[in-house]
Length: 113
Length: 112
Image (cartoon, rainbow over all chains, first blue to last red; front, side, top):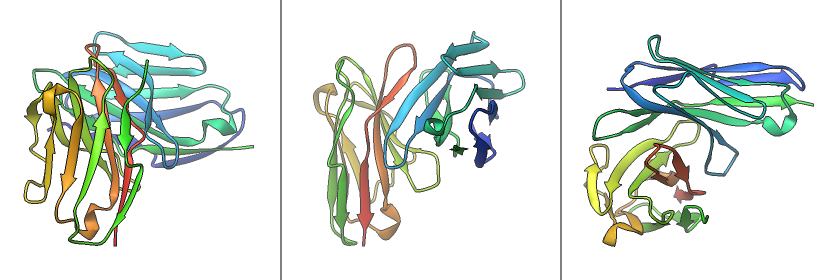
């Protein structure tokens, strides 16, 4: 059974700092890995999707990498802003016909002005 | 393109009462998921549909939870009777062929 872990559970950084959020998964037979952002009281917004054959994806100040062999993904946020404050979740979609999606517990990010 | 619509956004009920949540997915998205998210935790899968067929309901507490997806479009999730521990946000999501998921805003349930 896939298990997804995110460390740290919470992170506080000053504005302008570059930061890395970590995601690890136990079963490397994934179809893709997706990063989401969740604001308080809101649903999940998709940030980046990395297919199993890809190593990284970039969108603006965000860069996500995937290393299937080590069971790890990272989300890099450049030049952080207070508006980046939110909970960031990663989710691994398994291969095969079932395609179950397993989430981590998230990293709560606070960017201080 | 319209997003995933969910209703109601908020619901407060007393324990042992029943509640139903509704999800209207993005048009053409065959795969639909219901997740339960308890405060401070990641979403936990309750049930997965492919069109109107159930793919995975192994984590659905079937003694009190039920879900259906008629005609492979809209879906409803029902809880009867509700318990205090059912207080959570219920998220509906749909998936495209690339594997990307799109979520609704969620339905926040408080059981008193």
